[in-house]
Image (cartoon, rainbow, N blue to C red; front, side, top):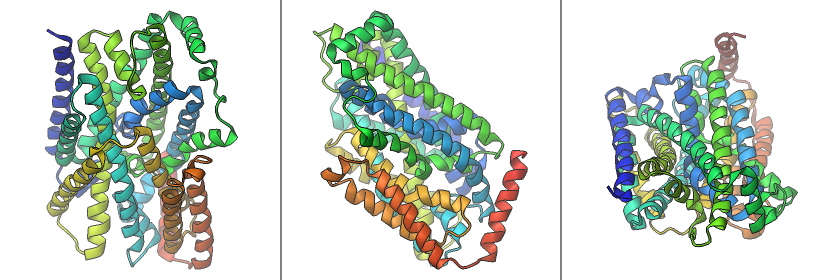
Length: 496
């Protein structure tokens, strides 16, 4: 059996497994709450690994190792910022969002939560939120599809477009049928595969490159500054990289897991599992890049044409072809877990937050699920069109979409959970300012080279939302009742 057949067999087993999980979830999806939020029944481990896997995407196994391979450890500040941001997100947002979305009309999407929380009657906030989700998630889904095309191109030498179509077809099918439960269960499996693969590749690799001392010495031969956290970057560069952590507060595909977890008390266990998974996985991605630098320096006859494929290449070099196929499945898992989550959140935004708000109609559960599935197909096709011509790196596409969500929703989510006086017009104003800042700043080289666009976008959103709310605040008995009820429920369920 050739190496190609072994690797292909591992990939086929993985893809069939994902489709089976989608079928299993389809059999347990009965209404819109099941399709969009798994009936708020996720267990801590599933919620934690689902959030982590849907968060990290191909960026974890391709984008981050590729950036460190090229530029060195100064890119580690992104990982540091993300870890801090994820921890604070689980600590401060997860418990409150879980109870508040339940108290406020059992909200099942982020835009519907904001609408219900702020008691907006004109639906502008809900529609604008849905439009922002649609715009930025189209870029985000596109980045995942690009990663899928690159994956098959690098792994099997297939045409980029064939790989793009295969990956897109499988992920769309299990998202289409399985809904949130299917996405969460596949994320759990995918997160587990990613975790072990990211530990195994650098551990085996460091022995092949002569141990930690020899590996570090070889890296210094290439460029001593590759091992420095500060070389090649200044204070603004460090702030820009670490500021990725701000994005967590506003990522709909991540914080929706908080809404779906079974109880508030279980958010603490989920936080521990999720952050542990994240720290070890990021460490594995960083170590993979460093081992890759040393390995290809020690083997000058071998050339790495695409730095973002360093994990893939090392997996094929270091392991038996079938295990190498499992490593490849880990990359595909990282890509697919994020794309599926994003497709589902975008479809819910189109149906729940745009269609229903504009036409002011109450669809039956069966029709809502049907329209949700149609929306999955629509978003997939649009993202596929954007991804057809590979014109940007995975990291660049992800960073733009990440900043868009972080700057648009992050400050509003925090204010809505912790400040009674946030108003609808304040939230809408801040959200629009945050989104526009990212769109403008991120497309002007002179600005984005100085500071990552999420920083000005996040700050301006927070300032505008606060000031406008102060001027437009009017006491609302229902908002006060729900705010107090959510705090009481939080205290009761958390056992404090």
